[in-house]
Length: 191
Ligand code: DQA
Image (cartoon, rainbow, N blue to C red; front, side, top):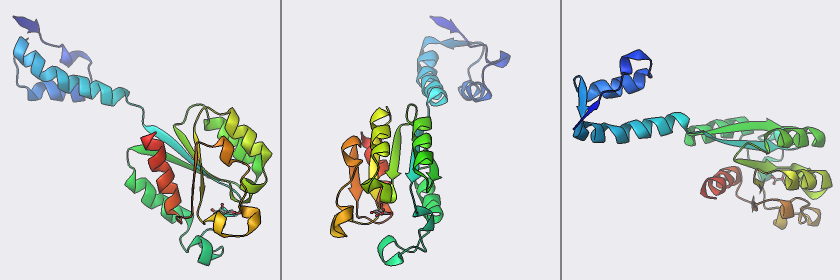
């Protein structure tokens, strides 16, 4: 049985054309050749249509000062330097980053991505302990939100022990320094 060869000269992507050329088939594909090529073709189409995972890291007030702010607690790396490394480590996912000192801007950002992204990694800074508005926003979203903290808030002052947002979040990671963000990404990837 012989199957007609794809008409790849006339419009299919160069990648498929190259793929088919590599098979070195002539005018037609035999059934065996077709069966040989088709899994490659399917993988290719899947790759084409595959949506990159999209994750937002959202940092709240004073986290723009990482590296400078209380390095004994928050470390001496800027978030931008850390983010560069994180993006290199997770090349296959899109990691967007937004920081704001303004509660309303954080809410606007979460509403913007919270129905289409695969996850939000949220360090709400001090708003963690005060913001009903952030709590309500997280509950309204479809995208899972992971609460993170660089420091172990439970080993610090008592006012940091309570979080207004934890109950609305998918989970909480705290106390692992900047690595808390990576652990949150791992949690999103595995869930
Ligand atoms: C923090 C802990 C909060 O209590 C504090 O207000 C912050 C940073 C952390 O990452 O450890 O701004 O969220």
